[in-house]
Image (cartoon, rainbow, N blue to C red; front, top):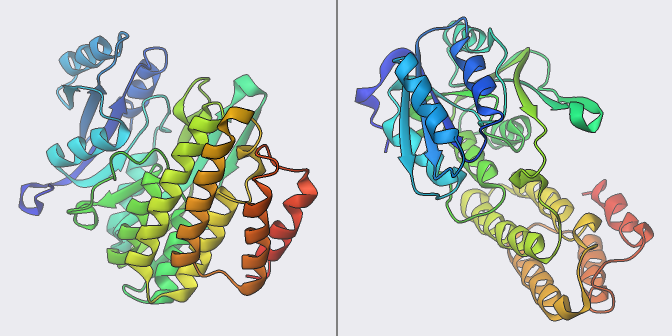
Length: 340
């Protein structure tokens, strides 16, 4: 994996998985190369692209010696990031999706904060650019602050809440990622599981009041795939994986598991958007998947008795209507979450 003694001090390794994004890739790479901080090691992982993305990568590598290109068979974003981490040279590591943008002074602010505050992770605000959909919105970090407290349950809980769901928009000291890999074969939440491990081993982090990452709307991207049975299959598989890792990492940390239980409930059984595109012939599969998820949740999650009753009823009702019920069927679960 990443060898600490091979790092180059002060250098940021930027890992960019790339798959069929020829329309967005040049502006993404320009935003990286245009950073005011110049000590960059840019790893472009061409994950089996079938459009012009691979050629674009090669052109940028010829034009700038900081760019390295790896052409590989399609293995997914996790495999691409893992490959990038194996070849990273920098003292610092960050991840960028190939259809997104990095504001000009972001890396300079990251490194300045990391060195002046002596922290291991720096994160900033993420802005979602949805111009084509008619709106923009911001996911903020908390106001600028420094947090310390390795191996303290309250600290780990706060770190997980602050890190949120994405590995993007953050700068990591190389050592906190050592021997951590993104889980391959898991369709969703792979970032979440990695951030849990970072929280467990990261003694300090800083949040800065700066828009450090711009995620752009791209029709047809994996995060915007049509919901239906295939989506539900992937979601259940991923949530079951999350549940198993939850008990593995935080078996004796009840406050952390309770927070993560809320997440699993919201993303799974209380997510009415998942139950809208099924057809009658898919009924048996939907019921089987739902019961598998519920059985895993009961074994690994911390679920109060009143929530168990509501979720158990929700699971039973799916056999009568696989496309869900009106919102009032979900409202009691949402209300109950406030009391967990």
